[in-house]
Length: 220
View 1 (cartoon, rainbow, N blue to C red):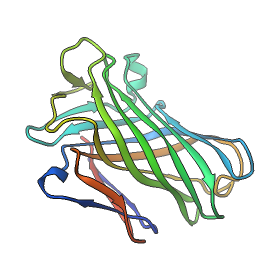
View 2: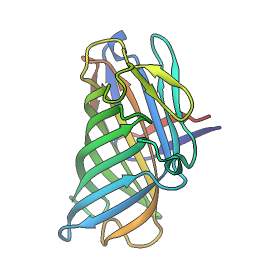
View 3: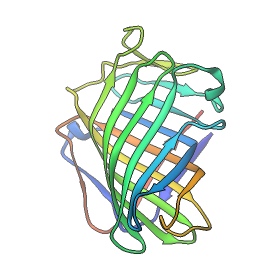
View 4: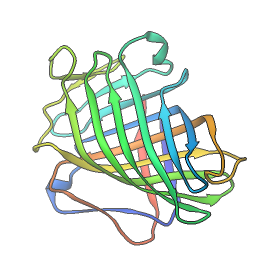
């Protein structure tokens, strides 16, 4: 099954550089559980974690390919597999906010994909809210059985990606909430989709222009 997350917004990502900016890995997860806890009228913390219907994958693109698939409902399998997004919210207007935080994707035996996140929250209205930004300090960490592989509930790949970590990349996240406004009150149980692409340093990623961000992901 293929799905596309197209975020028509006033922010974009451009990859500058040559072969060093080739995408080496991607990830995408749907049906995460999102929540927001305000700390003031303009600030707060957004989190997204695995829920009962979450599914997705982490895929190595180059130089050899492989996919660690996380089957829909993998939470019920009681493995170490998890997805955790933690982002600050600091509103600058009624439709925009800045954000920064972390991403941790854990495979079934404890290995992790970790990244620092920074970017923009925006809404064009109609309940649509998205975050688009950059990933920095991206690492694949062999924490589990020290087997050098990132393992899904189905499939795996070698974590010896080209280039020297830390890697960098692009990150996007989308949810639709028809009531409650743009971070005007606390919420939980919100369905969230998230995607990312990873490139080796020193491929330069920069927020540029006021354009659109389109992230295409594939899920089996």
